Length: 640
Ligand code: NAP
Image (cartoon, rainbow, N blue to C red; front, top):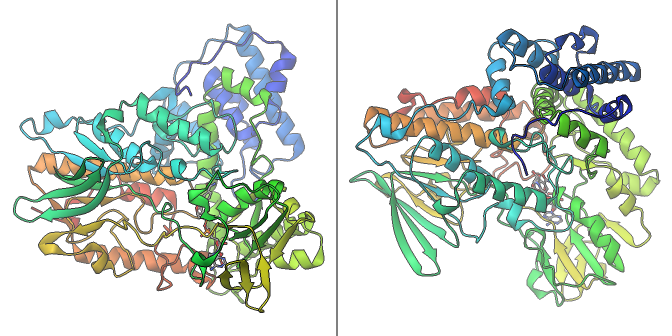
C-alpha cells in the first residue's frame, strides 16, 4: 500500500474522465480537484454540503446539484489534462482555508482549521510530527519509554516518540503486530468506519481496495506502517507484560514480562499501556457453558478448523461482530439459530461491503489526494453533524424510545429502513429495537443481514437463555434447542481496562484495587498515584457516533510525546496527575455522558461498567479532545 504517491498524469478522453467522477461524493471531489488544479472557482456556494443531513453521506445535494458538481469537477480535470496535468503549487493560507471551509460546510473557525489541516496532512506534510529532538532538549539523559501492545495505538505512539528520538521498547504478547486486527479474524470481519478516515493521518493511502476494508487488508496496513516507520526492531514479540511496579526511590517503572525464555524485568522511565479495550473475550454469564458436548468458541478466537458445513449452529449475540459473521455462518450451516437479547439499530450503508469501483480507482490514481479530502469531509460531518443526534433534550418525553426531536427523526428513518428490509410482521417486531438510536453502537448494514434473517434455514430466537446444556441451549420457557456448534458473539470485557496486568503505583497503590471495577482517568490518559503511566484508549475515550478511534489514539500519542518533552525540558523525573484535577474532570465527563443517548438510556451496552456508569465513551466533540491533548498542563501534575 502506497502512502503518498504522486498523481498520475491524465491522458484519458473526456468520457473516461466523466466516468471517473461518477458516483464520487461531490464535496470532497470538488475540493480535491480544486486542490490539484488550483481552480477554486469550482467551489460554488450553492454546492456547499449540508453537514447536518442525517443519513445522507453526500451532504444533502439534489440529483441536479450532484450532477452539476461532478460536471464542474470533470471539466476542471479536462482543462488540467489539456494543460499538461501539472499539479498546482501547494495552496497558500487563503486558498487552503477556502478548500477546508468548503468540505466543512461553508465556514471553518480558527480553532478547527489547524485540526483539519493536521488531519489532511496535505502533500505528505505530517503536521503532528514532534518538532523537537530528545538529544537537543536533554543531551545527557536517556529517557526510555516502554509501550505495552503493538496494535493500532501502540504503533502510533511508538512512531511519534521515535520521530522525537526517544528510545522505545514495545512489549507485544502476540507474534505479530495489529492487536484487535490480528486477533479478530472471524469470517466477514471488517471495519465499520470508512478507511479514508480509519487510517493514520501520517499514513494515508489512496490504495484502500474497499470503502470499509476487511480484516486481512487492515492487518496488512498496520504491518506496512510498522515497516515503513522502521518499528519492528523495537518490538519484543511473544512477550506478555504481567506486572508493572513503580519504584518510589528512583521513580521508574519495573516492567515484568514473560516470554519464551521465562520471566524478565525491564526498567523504563515512562510506561504506556496500549492494550486496547476490545480484545479480551466476554463469555456470557450463563450456566453450563463448559457442559456443551460439541465445539464452541468466541468470535475473537475463531476456530477455523471447526467444520460448520451442514451443522446445526447456534450464535449468541447480535452486536457488530455477530452481524458481520452471521451471514457467513448461514451460508454453511444446515440450520442457524441466533439468540438475540437486544436488537441492534441498523444503519443503512449501501457501499458497506463494496470494493471501490474501477471509476473511483481511476480518480484515486489521478487525484490521489481525493482520499485526504474525503477524510476531511467525513471528519467534518461526524464532528459537526452526528453528535446532535445523540444529544438529550431534557424537555423531550418520553425518553425510552428517543431522547430528542433529532434523535426521534433518526429513529423514524431507521425504522423506515427496517420496514423496507424486514416486511414480515413477526420478524419485524423482533428486529425493531425498543430503545433510542445511538444508545448502543449502531450496526452498519447493506441489506445482507436482514436478508440472512429471512432465510428458511435461519431462526431468530428472542427468548432468553436459561442455560447451556450438553446438547445445546435451554431457553427460559423451558424449551431445549439442539445444536452441533455454539459460537459466542458476546463481545469483550471492555470495562476491565488493563487486565490482566497488575499495576502498582506510588507506595504500592494497586490500580485495579483503586478502580474497584470503575476505571477512570484524566483525559483517559493518567491516574493519580501512577506517575509516568499513560493509558491509550483508556476510560472515556471511545466514540459512538462521531469519529474514528484512530483519531483519539493520535491525540493521546501527541499528549504522551509532549509529556515526555515536559520531563526532558524541566529535567524532572516524574509527573503524577493531581487528584482534584482528575476528579473534577471525571465529573465533567459523567455529566456530559448523561446528556447523550448512551448515558440517558437504561439499555444494556458495553459502554457501561458493572455500576451502570458509562466508563467508555467520550461525550463531547472531536475538537474538544484535540484541544485538551495538545500538551499537558504542568499544573495538572505533581512534578517531581
Ligand atoms: P457487543 O457489541 O458487546 O455485542 C455482544 C452481543 O452479545 C450483544 O448482542 C449482547 O446482547 C450479546 N450477549 C451478551 N451476553 C449475552 C447473553 N448472556 N445472552 C445473550 N446475548 C448476550 O460485542 P461485539 O459485537 O463484539 O462488538 C463490540 C464492539 O467492537 C462494537 O461495538 C464495536 O465498537 C467494535 N467492533 C467493531 C467492528 C468494526 O469496526 N467492524 C466489528 C466488530 C466489533 P446485549 O446487546 O443485550 O448486551
